[in-house]
Length: 66
Image (cartoon, rainbow, N blue to C red):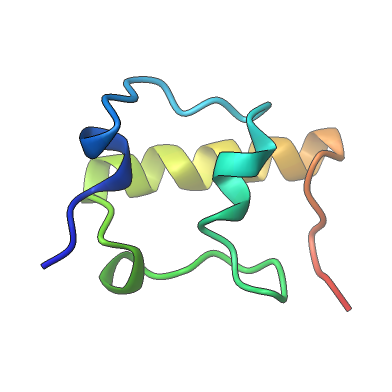
């Protein structure tokens, strides 16, 4: 079983401005990857989803990638 990336690297706050980390959890079509695939805990997956949504709204991440 995979370790949670955020717990492993001792990251308490998932920041929407840190686009490089957020991109690790998106597929090539800019969609979120499942928890099963990434190994992120449920709590951190919810925080990650919120951060991705905020980054998309601010224009830092695309909504869809062609």
